[in-house]
Length: 434
Picture 1 (tube, rainbow, N blue to C red):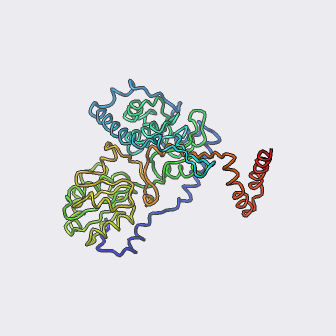
Picture 2 (picture 1 turned 180 degrees about the horizontal axis):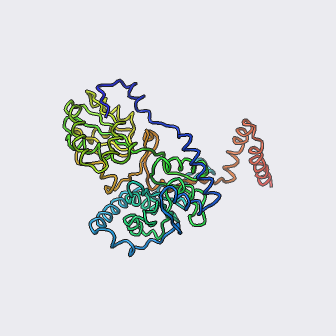
Picture 3 (picture 1 turned 45 degrees about the vertical axis):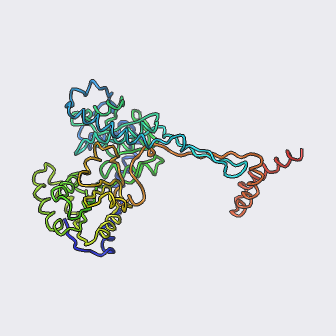
């Protein structure tokens, strides 16, 4: 972890530049996967599953029934899943657009414009299953899609080592009423949902976290006309701590994000000399107890510990970083949180670990990374919805608006646009004269 004592803001800005262009070779391989899946469908997906997952499967889809999984999942874990699902449903239900959000407004006499919220018809959900089978992502993505009213939800996840679905992922899908899962992971799963194969339906929008291949594949899917949830990349956390912060908790929060992957990143910004001097030794102590310590070590090598004397400077730095997750362990944490303008999700106060949002508090854990929290937010019910506008004009409205549209269209040298209005105005004049 690199220590920085009162760095200048210009230096910090350069340090936090996490934007990256796709690896050229990786992009070529991803596009090749898409082209092969488009051409060969199911057989291509099965072939890539053999190559990348080391599993030979005869069928891409398997039925999801509760009786298949309920005895394979511990009762304590089942209760935790139920509890988390209820919290996530409670929080996300408040996001469902109500009647007051669908509106029609008479902007001028005879000219009415409206806005309607509609669900995407088919949502594609990608559930990671590589180094960690993220059954929590099932809750975070399926529940908002269901609340949005999507007619069809297509779920893809890599097969386990026996060519089936991870039991906890299967149980969580069954709990939410999903009756089929497709055994496909990586770029080939995203490609299959983009084009559709004999087994895997084409979807309108793909959501869900994944590794670098999945992230790049979602960008290629977007270029091929399929919507995606948000820009994503390696997981990250920022921690804002003053002298009131608990050293042990701050270290644990750093490690809870660092263990996600070798390319994860941690930023700790503190106004406390004690935290600045003692955090890295405490992290090292806790790190030795972790099964994924080698992965966490690699991410910590790309992480930063920054000391600044004032809380105002600390908040400025975290806003520049625009983290996926921000943990605030300071006095008056609630007031400090009100100064935060760029973060995917904020965890306020000493008793609010980032892990709570990852699993069960109710908010969504699918969040923007790489500084994109400065321009977008995380997954909500509206991720699986689209807006559609309407307009209705009466004769009076056309009489007032039409000549102005003709003037504007002719100024842009779009004669057909002007004629579409002018013809109606002539007909309207004929009706009036008649």
